[in-house]
Length: 176
Image (cartoon, rainbow, N blue to C red; front, side):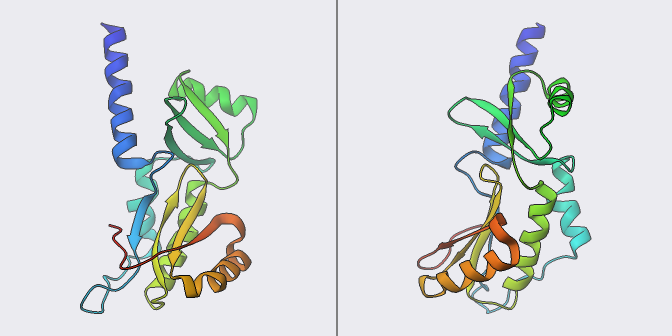
């Protein structure tokens, strides 16, 4: 019975991870940065409210860069900023042995602060078309039109380093 309960719990976590948090191919927290058809976009909440809704709700400690389901190993993978042997043992006690731990440069909180700044900029900059967090790559992804690609790659590299990846979008964004 314990074994069945364990499998059901792991299955439930996997379903939640695949549908709600992220996978190695899903970008989470996507937001269409373009205005709606009326020309207006809903205003962003304050950073404190945004933090509670989009960061704290995941419950990540400050040294966790995110969690995703690795489609190659069929395991949950926790990205850890400070991957010392003691920290990995502590996380294994908490999350079990059947998970992976990979290194990352940035905590989820740190990435979400950058993403929030970009969302704020997107309120007045119609060239920013889409955005989200790529958990598996431990970075923010921002979409712009081709004629703005070089400018934003240089601008965001100067401002955020490798925390932000700028990609080209075509047509009207369809992100949620």
